Amino acid sequence: MHKVPVGVLGASGYAGRELCGLIARHPKLELAFASANEQRGQRARIGATEVTYVATEDAPLSKAEIVFTALPHGASAQWVGNARATGARVVDLSSDFRPGAGQTEAPYGLTELMRAKLPGAEIVANPGCYPTAILLALAPLLKAGWVVPGATINVSAASGVTGAGYSPRPDLLFAEVAEDFRAYAVGNEHRHLAEMQAVANELGGKHNDILFTPHLLPVARGILATITVPVNEYTDDPAALWRECYRGEPFIEIVDQPPALRDVVRRNVVRLSVTKAANVRQPTLIIISAIDNLMKGASGQALQNANVLLGLNEQAGLPI
Image (cartoon, rainbow, N blue to C red; front, side, top):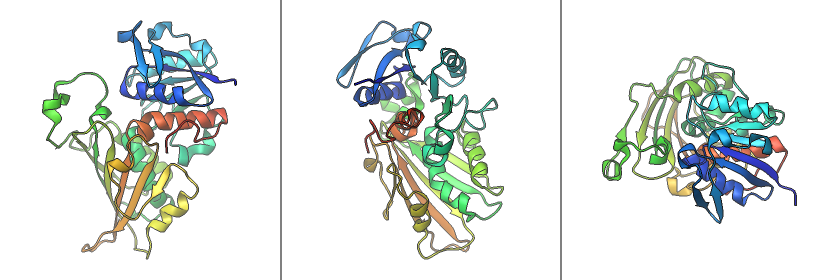
């Protein structure tokens, strides 16, 4: 059976390794190369597959129909251009081409909302992990015009340690993270904020600021976001809006009880609950959103986007 050759630049990081593992199990794809500068020449076992890393500058870009760039933010754009020069299409996991990045934007790969823009794309900007969890939770409200104009949307979200990347840092050592829970980037200055605000405005936000406070969880993977949104009025069944918006979407689950990380880890899904807030004067909805930051928040969504680019079954190779 013919398989489509794909390559991964930045394959030794958490997202890159996850992606290589998904490709190895994909029925229609095969890994043409995997690059990792610091580990060039080294072998790594990813699932049942053994991969030999090559230097990024030695990667045979012309051998791949799709190149996934999982390189650091700011370093990816050059290699996206190099891959495009060979005729390959690119799914970029960095922030370089996302909304709010300040340069030419590519179609935004929040698949469930932007699917129609993807099939003919040369470059797809894969969303960040926090934006995936938060924007898929907010989209039905924004598109329906339920959010109070000018109201602030408050987001408190916690991520596992892999969200900080693979590079060693003293503050991410086991003894620093275990048995602790802390906020970071306090002051509404997280690098994902511009991306979330730009997409929220595109989806129909009416001068709605997003006030975002991220936290570090002492776990390896997963994101749990609590989102409070002032709305114009309550309905008897507020979750009906989400069920209708995401009807038929295999990777979005609308549930009655607040989701937990164990519901989503190692799955390419977003799990959402919607609750009316009691004891407040302003009608407010509380949305809880859970994802695996490495799967739906990075590599799984990248593969989902590649499936769309190639005209394959969107669920191919993805754990649900």
